[in-house]
Image 1 (tube, rainbow, N blue to C red):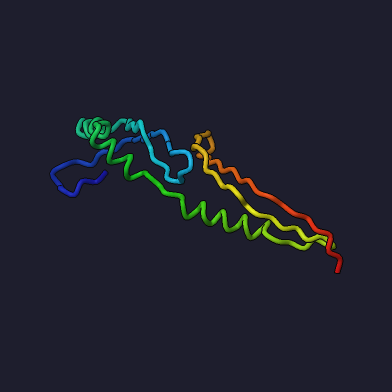
Image 2 (image 1 turned 45 degrees about the vertical axis):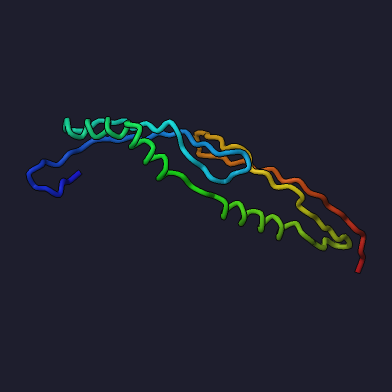
Length: 131
């Protein structure tokens, strides 16, 4: 970090921010809890700032800034699913579907990233309709 005030010397270090993702079942808004700031810097002042990052006030501010609402993405997904399976002619067969339920599950963290499960329930009707 290069300070704006020239009376301070630059500081170097490493910082890790960890958090646990959460959401309510049925909600695409992902929040974070158990924020932890860790690391090591080349100056005592930097190490004090890292400790400040673990204070409840700063942890709450960090958690709030990390919150993401994926409702638009989920709605886009619903539209793509509907478009892909709504009504198709496959040879002599007409396939019509309806989506009756679209449920969002509880977010899960994996080594590769986050997984927000969705469950879709619907019906399909296949009619023989030769040209």
